[in-house]
Length: 358
Image (cartoon, rainbow, N blue to C red; front, side):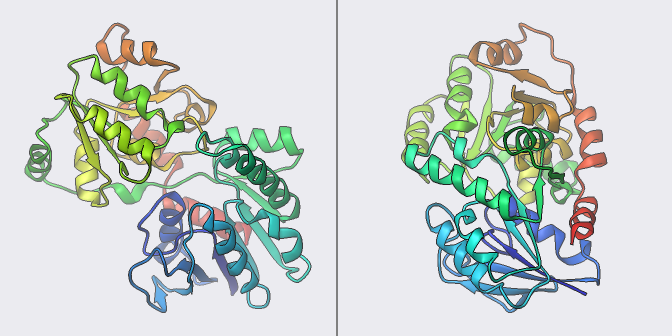
């Protein structure tokens, strides 16, 4: 029996983002009896608490798990891991500054999933970017195993640090739903949209996700766009929401957690627009692929690797405009995206890959 601690997510049940969803799906029915999981959770972020969830033990830290608080959150979680676990799996590198000290006391297996390149995100100032870059370097130096979720991240780690990493992507088959046609029609109707008559984007409202580029492009057309995100989280999102809500063809929708609704909106769209420019394998992209979406993605190596170079791509507003207006021919890639997703991004495969590392 391997005792494995998972550090760095908000915790479970999943209510936030990609890491939380990953934890939700590698524990429980996808895990083997050879692994005993303990998941560190934020009691500040999760409204309810319990001792166990899907067979995993839960330990709560009274600090927020995201933003600047994540550093302290990770450090306190790691301190509690020194004596009790055969493997510590750390999600993200924000606590990397503490790794040299942690390794003085913890001599078993330390695994880190670097996620995306956090220090490259536009929202951080120079000081924070430097801190995150040093944290990344220390996290990779003091880990036994490095996980990258995209070949682009694998290449980056090899080129920048001359270190090997293990490629384990992100699962998304949890989004699949068996809904009647009428149920899907009713959901779409509640958003005043019809099957095949709109494009959709789902993301966190951050500059590196090219939210404004997408909104501005659609605002100069009559093409329907449903844009779902956490609009009220920061001033950037509030500004975009206020500015683009006035367009009749753009529906600004607050973040949705109901998987039936998300599945219906994705699976009935004409195109899924993916604007992420940073990170590795983005959860929202592979989730859309499982919903048989014809995909238009921002042209960076991470998105190309995720879609195996088989989607349509844009680098700027002109190229996106050409794609959505029909000025260039778009081949419906929805079935190809679905085949790739089923082959590479199922949670049973991902969970087994993690367990092989333990």
